[in-house]
Length: 41
Image (cartoon, rainbow, N blue to C red; front, side, top):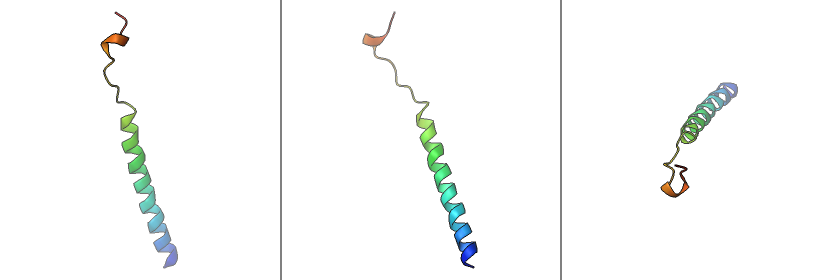
């Protein structure tokens, strides 16, 4: 019984970690607009 609860806990924590990592990865693609003063035109 302990082994089954431990496996369930590990699976749940793994899902939480994957969800957290997936939401953080979407922030890497965010690129704010470059200010006009820094643009090379």
